[in-house]
Image 1 (tube, helix red, strand yellow):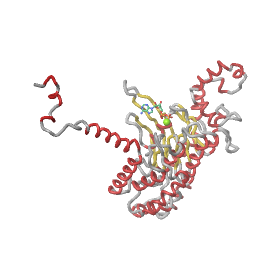
Image 2: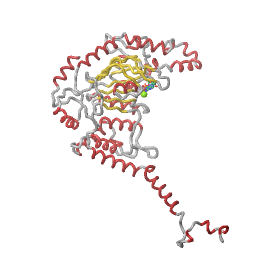
Image 3: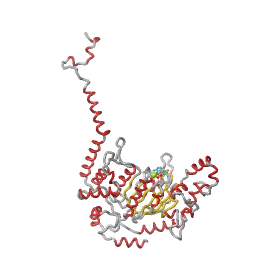
Image 4: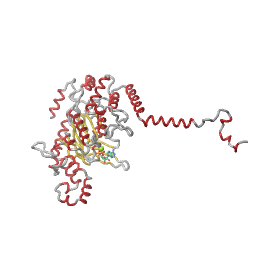
Length: 446
Ligand SMILES: Nc1ncnc2c1ncn2[C@@H]1O[C@H](COP(=O)(O)OP(=O)(O)O)[C@@H](O)[C@H]1O
Ligand SMILES: [Mg+2]
């Protein structure tokens, strides 16, 4: 495999940038290619013995959020991070993309294409868990303003427009391209579409490495499926995609290439997603079955994994036992006999000595030896004037459309002006009469 990958790098000449770049972004990168020696631009990410320790605010205590994680993500694959909430999925994504909180300390090695890299804007993109979009703009406007702000000035307006349109099509947003995003008083696009707009903004610059934190949370299973399918298509295009996914449906689970299962900051499983619950070839067996937790025939595999490793299920079980005693006594599910904490411990131990773990360590060593090049866009490529112009225009459009922001304020200002302006109404024009009305009251009259 290593040999194959090394050959791939040698064979990729300066002109062709490999799969995954649209013709337009290829022109974008070519200039860079001509000035620097660039081999393979794919992103191969590896992490070894990754431990993240956070300092808790008051007493200076420390806590390990992630412990000794080893794994890799290759171009063309979609890696899903799964685990119960609080298991460290977001922290792992933050650690890999170099955006950990100030009180978090990282140890271990994270390598991009065999080098320690500062993953900057343009190489890696990060789609956060919540959408930060301007509610009054339409989907097409949102994406095209973002394009104006970041694409180089040299690119012609028609090229930019074509890139925006191709991104809209890639994210399946054609039907709602002219609908406003929506805010507290403006009905707009649905939650799933918002997620897709957020992803569209990030793939506009065609990053080689894409991180997404829970892109499907809060979506119904059909929207979740379409978002995941798009992510997989992006991965197939030669990109490296890592996403944390919370409670996927079985259709979504089928789309995963690699699965990283975390519980309490430790690896429960890392390997092919399907190898976790079924034998992928004659020599191997399903990981969970080998470890003593076979997936029952009619259960969604991802539900089964999360059930095994979510310690809150002990409480669920206790509650259910109280109400449905008989049913549980007859069950032969191994999970009913031991607590989840024990199950997690067993799985952690089992993984550490399993072929999956050795294979992962071997692969990480192999991949780290491949020295590829990291294309670094170095921030926005638009000029300062273009950015100022775009921001001013966008801001004016936003203000004129946002009832609360502009019109409501205007109404309030008019009312206040009338109030203040009418205080001296009909006060007269003769000098002594315009003095303070107090002088006219009978008490002060002489
Ligand atoms: N900067 C931090 N300071 C303190 N605790 C943190 C910090 N980052 C993460 N944690 C803790 O680490 C655990 C994992 O968090 P997180 O990665 O957000 O989990 P997930 O995304 O899987 O739900 C949580 O219990 C959280 O409280
Ligand atoms: Mg999270």
